[in-house]
Amino acid sequence: MEIATIDIAIFAIYIVFIIGLASWVSREKPGHEKDSSDYFLASKALPWWAVGGSLIASNISAEQIVGMTGAGYDVGLAISAYELIAAASLIIIAKWILPIYLRHNIYTMPQFLEERYNTNVRTVLAIFWLGIYIFVNLTSVLWLGALAMNTVADVNIVYGLIFLGILSMAYSLYGGLKAVALTDIVQVVLLVLGGIITLYVSLEAIGHQFVGESAGFGEGAAYLFEHSRDKFDLIFDEGQHGYEQLPGIWMLLGGQWIVNMAYWGFNQYIIQRALAAKSLHEAQKGICFAAYVKLFMPIIVVIPGIAAALLYPDLAKVDQAYPELLKLVPDGFRGLAFAALVAAIVSSLASMCNSISTIFTMDIYSHFKKGLNEQQLVKVGRITTLVALIIAMLTAQPLLGNFEGAFAFIQEFTGFFTPGILIIFLLGMFWKKANVNSALVAAIGSFLLSIGFKWFAGDVPFLNRMALIFLICLALSVLVTYLTGGGKDDPKAIDLSELDTTTTASFKVNAVAVFVILIGLYVAMDF
Image (tube, rainbow, N blue to C red; front, side, top):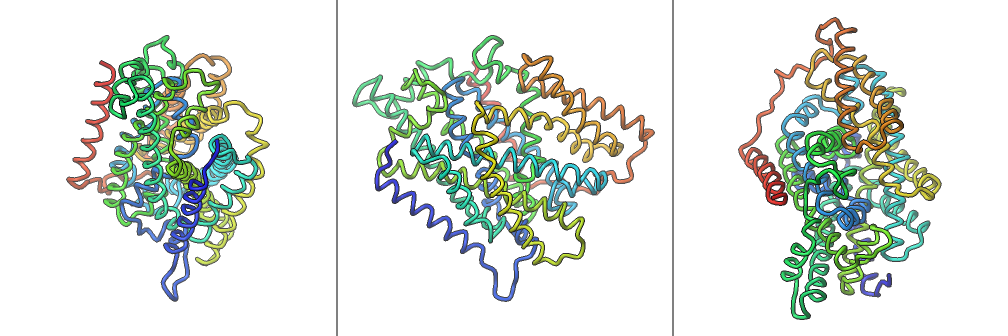
């Protein structure tokens, strides 16, 4: 796709602005040196809007923008389940999970596991998360981001990898989480604005092409809904195209909740934003903000994909839908939309790098090398960020370059561990009898059962498979707990009676509103 000079200029302005903003917010007061709390948890001073914006920016990347637009092209609005159930999951996490984290004053997920179980569980899972974050998450965002830049703007893939890596380092390496979180709100504004522009031009094009030259956005929207009604189902019937990815009502009763609860509640590079909030109530306000944005995301990401199916019914690959739609965007606005795409990629990279450095520094390096001062911890964190990005840039193409459907593979691979991770945390938080053995059974069982189901029951939809494995591993963990613990409470059990889960009136109103909107959408779109 040809990029006009004005688009290049707008994109360059974005780059200069985001690096300048990151440098400005990273400044320290005279005489104060950045310590570990500053670098890894933004001095625990993030306001609600930074928490919410950073949650969204960390989550949305090229695979969501290009991939979900492509999924909208292929299966329609039902793919929105990943966004809609995320909104409900965020409310649950804000109410019952986040107070436990903040009560224990933790930096990382492995740290919590040591406090609840033991050091071995902390170390093993810290190493596991580092491997996943570097060789799966970081490499995939880099590679798929470079591919997206190549498709949208004809940027050489190798140059794209280098550019994305350097840009994410440029504004996050020095400032840490504070720089990432406070610039993420700009990234979210760009992301939403770019999505609105793409939605508008796609519906306007439908109006011009199918209704008449004088028709516009409104007529295009009405025509799309009327002539693509099958693409607006939120719940599939068995045998309907897309059921294997989104298996009807069973998806809503099981697999989607497991994916979203594990991702939003027990994922370091996501939950770290909430841990850095000024207070519990400020974090909960930020999470409510993120929940509303998740409810809005299908409108600006999935519906343009459905529009593309009407405008370009014969695309060779569904992921071509987003680049095709960008061709409709006028010069100038195209640069803004491209900046939004890069913003989504870079904010995810920066978030992952900061969490990698946090886990390595706080859970591995400082655990085995005692007596480090605050400045040494920050230095190790910065070096870790740099090394992780270099490793990911060097390994992205060898790991993913020759793999078809890389994102789907990555989702399924990480899903091998998701049921076990969810069980370890939920039992550790809410069941006093859970012990080290129950945690190990959940982790090992989840992996082995996932391989077994994949090998012997590959036709079972992925989300249903996760739900079945979750139930089996949960039963095994409870059984092993009673066999090895004698039915006694574990000495490291959490005393929930000391936990304050009261919420403000505004949180309760917003929580109810999110669930009412969610239920209303499913009822309205399937009747």
